[in-house]
Length: 199
Image 1 (cartoon, one colour):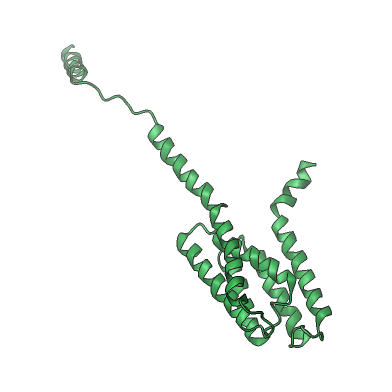
Image 2 (tube, rainbow, N blue to C red):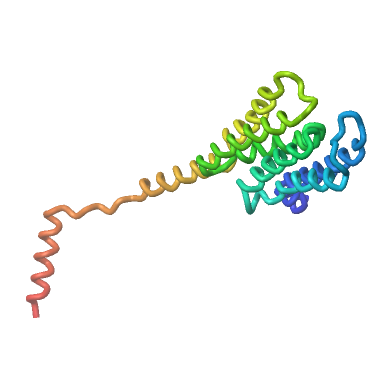
């Protein structure tokens, strides 16, 4: 049983991303034409949403570029259609996950850049929404910054720091060779000279 559970645990995030992509594209396709639906055609809205979500499948090979690209693409799509991102619940969940991944970076510079991307892109998305309520321009970026904070509080950065600590401790914990005392050095020199003199 554990033979089947271990791959499922390893690729659980990828399964969630695929399910979110299916749900988001279906939501956009069914909601099209409503009062608060996206204004662009289905041939643009459905593939755009699918690409935004499926970008997160590259998080293993591109741990920074995949979630950052998701946010940047969502902000760019908001300039084309202000309702495309804000009316899709699946993108809301995926955006929080992408903010978590950006806070989960091992490089502190990329981690800080990820926060800037989340705040700027979230503000751009809300700004382009024609139906945004008052105060949403402030509270939505702050909400997604919580995902970044949660990601920066744990994850792969912590074990790497601990592993560095372990290597340092192991290096210091290695037994040092006892340096020979001056008396032992003299005795070894005398024995070597006597052994060389004897026929």
